[in-house]
Image (cartoon, rainbow, N blue to C red; front, side, top):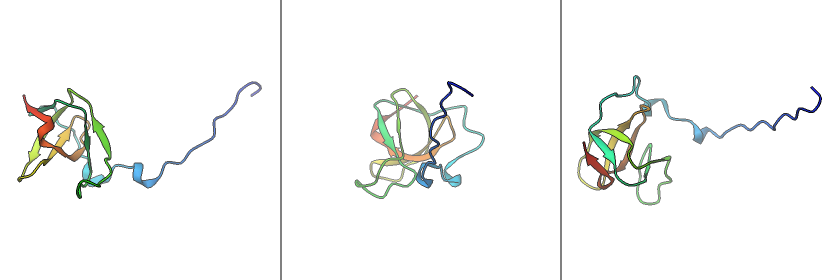
Length: 93
């Protein structure tokens, strides 16, 4: 079509995919905690040098699934992402 420019296609790396075992379906519709400060989440946290897989914004609602000691806990967000994040950045609802 004249006057129409098609953008260059980009293929995202495999690292941009959500691992199937980290996606819960259906996602929860009742939540236990709220994120009180913008903070990182991880599919697999392996220490301070781990690269985050994403960020929770302030006010995001999550379900606290597990917390064994230490600063990290497991949560599920409203998209069904089952991830690890800092417990200190959460507030009970």
